[in-house]
Image: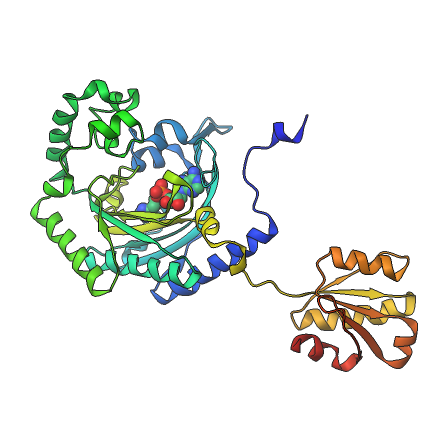
Length: 414
Ligand code: HAM
């Protein structure tokens, strides 16, 4: 069977993985200063968790979940996102005894989508959730933290779009008004949006179909139907973002693909060259979800960053590569002294690869070069007697002899 026939998911090769490591380390360093703690969540959960939280009439639940039965016929799903699992863990472990809980997670998510650049069936998210805060200041602070992270990691031109989706007291009336509006234009909607008109008319605002975009161009905007509490929250969010110096645009058509949102929703886009796949992060408030999953009433806010998309934006030069030293021992005696020297260098955190092949030094130097050596350390019989090694700098071709006891300092300094 050819490898193309068994290839299904995306690999992250070492050069890109270095960029990812920098992304994750920067995020963690910043999120920690805002009081977030890490939570490690399972990759697989009971299917009902996702259908109940994300919503039955969403693309994710209708057609994108990897769902299977286990040996006891339990329906399980590879997680399509992390928020539902965070809420489950929050309830299960009674984390709500604390007044506010801030949780950070990272890992792979799975959605059966059409794969293309920036959209994968296994992709990674870094997510942060604040559970137990109802103030719009918490929304603004968390968004502001995310913008600081983007800046620290080197994203240029990130744009923040915000909206409010209302709550259970004002959204039903808006849904009715939208349904009435769409019914007059039903033939222009795609099959999917026609089918979901009753259960979830908001989806039509988000649909990328040309007919749906045209049909909804003059649709009523939800921010004009907000109740007093949602409207005050939205004003509070905007003024807190202004105070924090975070620029934003209000996008009344942004409805998001998950049903748990209430009040604030947001997306951050940047020019990834990916067209509609340009949201690098997204999130919002979900004040009803903990209760929906039978926990205590808890207002919540959070977001997730798409790591592949962020990495595409950054390019390879953001990662700092540790210099590679290749050690070549010429003969048996030099090899045993070499092992001791190598151990000493590794103890000091330096990268040393021993070149084990036998044969002419010229060929071994070529192999060292192909291994990506920035420096080659050579130890032959004569050098061993003198108590020195030869270091060759592969970029300049300069060579020097260095005493054993000075080797680590010499490599560390250059
Ligand atoms: P989401 O908008 O579905 O939200 O996903 C968040 C981010 O994950 C997207 O903006 C995108 O960068 C990335 N992403 C989503 N699908 C893919 C894919 N197929 N391939 C590559 N990247 C992808 C959520 O998942 C919510 N749980 C966010 C949240 C947290 N809301 C509140 N708390």
